[in-house]
Image (cartoon, rainbow, N blue to C red; front, side, top):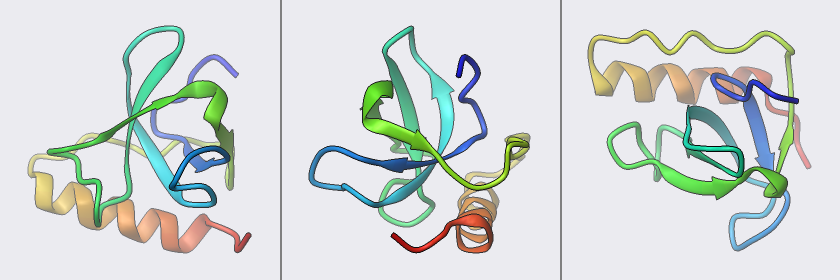
Length: 87
């Protein structure tokens, strides 16, 4: 999968194994920045290796066009709660 931006992903490695995130930025061929709207917000996203993430949920990406970080975090939480499946 080439385009991760806006996709719902689940961490498969690390301390946060099993946790769902939304990819908010692609850094390079290996790393992305992810947010969950709670602990990892849009203002302070987590840097993750792509090979430690598995795509989840719907194939269509989430729209990331927001005017305000608080609304973005709220929308990310809602998107995760709606589309994430239990491990």
